[in-house]
Image (cartoon, rainbow, N blue to C red; front, top):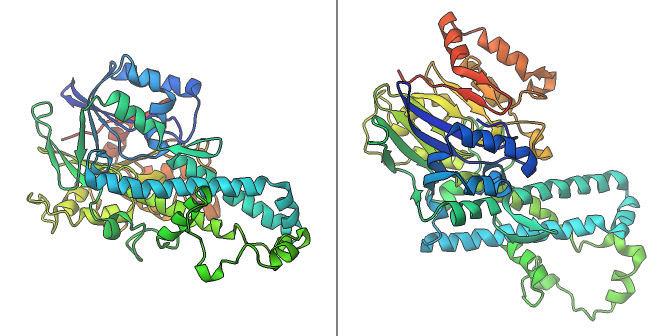
Length: 480
């Protein structure tokens, strides 16, 4: 796990004895970083794989998963060979179904960019600031609005390429992969696909869990009920009308409005110049209040994209051990895995093959940076019962979107992971992280406490298999 900052960049090497057989790269992202800063990591990565990757897995189009392809484009497109690329079925630009979905979802992402820009312009307006300050508790209200817009800007950056506040399309990192690296060697995978890695990797099968196929019942579901998800935010309903109204800002000739027609006044109404435009009455205006709903839409867009993650379970057939890489899948995706009609016998006597896979998981790449909605509880964490379970989490408070600190790490999820792994939880950067935020208990202390529960052999094996280096964390999974 490369330590570029909150975001995913993994290299998996598969060995037969001491002989290296296959190399897989999963994502190349971080929340932020200059080319100068990230070059050291990418150069180390290229040297580690001898400038060659057998398969590149791109889980989903979020900045913290594809940013490196943009910033370090030259390093990753020159003197670096990638044989195949795997993406989720939702990235197949030639599919009619995907084209329609991309347009609808793209319109919402563009609407988010427009709304964010409009709110930023408003916050930057000195007259607006003066008007806000005159209201009751005006300074605090203004500060809260500024914080809201800053958070919205960061969510916007996560999904969209923005120049001077304006939307210019999807993320450049994904375009680099598709247009410059792929060279038509992309396999688009969907739930239920099974990849037999022979002859390259005898005895290895990869099961594709996500992204889901059903929009309303799976992709658009952010959280479950009590016991299904960890403590979560209020679920928000989709509102296509909001996106349409936002687009009307840049297309004033359209008739789409954020209010029903009955509430739209004639521009020549008597009060327009007499009252509405009176500077002394500016505090009464609600012209832009409806744009604050962009926060809800941003969260929905974020969850939808996470649920579109390519999620893979890598099985070693002889031992039955499994490595789970779910991208940033949220509850809707996790739940959908249990509806896949596998025609594969269970090895552990479980009622469904997905539960069987989870029960044999010995390595878990923690979804969505230890957030509350990145790991299902009953249909995920509760089913990971293997005594050798280890986990890696891509969280670093020194390089992160500030609003994420409110939800990452989730203390309830951390507690379960510490218990189930006996401290074999490897976090990108433990600095500043608390296992119990309320009582300010450092995660480092809790990890040390959990590791005391290992047996002597377990501790010896962990210390042998785990390397903590400046640029990366490395863990070796014993297949036997």
